[in-house]
Length: 365
Ligand SMILES: Cc1ncc(COP(=O)(O)O)c(C=O)c1O
Image 1 (tube, protein in one colour):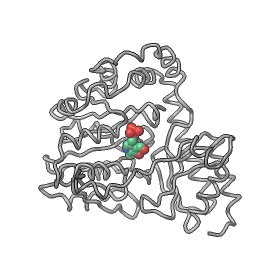
Image 2 (cartoon, protein in one colour):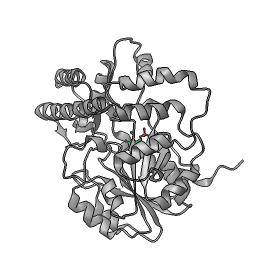
Image 3 (tube, helix red, strand yellow):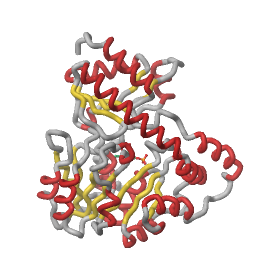
Image 4 (cartoon, protein in one colour):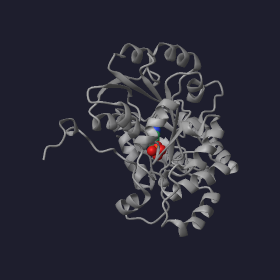
């Protein structure tokens, strides 16, 4: 058996630990404060729970293959055609479809270094060359450098916006200048996993540029603001020529029947989504101010997490918080050994984190 040569350097994705894993490791049964995977701290929408309970008796059926109602509802929300919506088992799966459809070995893809790790992972799986462009000093995508690195072999540019793990965003002027210069043979993937948490109304969303005719695919997920991470549901919005082929690449029934029903239910729960977004905006402000007051560098974020530079003490803080049942994400794998990424939690969880950090202030690395 010969494994493809370009799969030899594949490394595992470093996932955030689950509550069960943490309880096992710590041998505790108390409540865990889970601030490591940017999930929705409110739990699922009550409407989703109700629908799921009522749907359990139908799980012996396949779902409807076209997922028409969900695509139609999303299409109305974004004012596009249902055929422009492609559903994935998490937005991760759409990234897979994009590679399957467009990328041949030796094609180049451009990403920022660091950014969401799955772009690089899929590039490795499909044997594509990766051009990884360092972020600017403010930890934003370096669009000028990205432009300089475009070649005839470039197939796709991935931009997570807001950026993971910094939470940074791109101003309208920079977007406009950039998009004008990207050749039209290149697909630009604007990954808005955290797009719901952007507070500044002057920051444009990818859908606007798609409608203006740029070769864009917008990625959206139900995993964050919509509280369905465990059910795996995401989608892409793109131009018809691409969405049609992505839909053909997709295996039938890639969305399970419960995820499909839950997606429809949460889209109707306006109260829940508003609450989810507000809790993040308020918590983000509170944590940014409180941790800055404690003397740490907090990067400005428009996502449901903040990246904080703790200097040499990042690792010890991570370990000490972990022992106390507060879980945050170390950013060593992203190239920031001195930083931790903290998901915005419920107000009491955010407060607990601050209290514990205050308590740890005098600890040595
Ligand atoms: C930037 C970014 N894109 C996509 C995803 C994946 O989302 P999903 O759960 O929809 O696969 C994540 C998850 O953390 C993310 O940070």
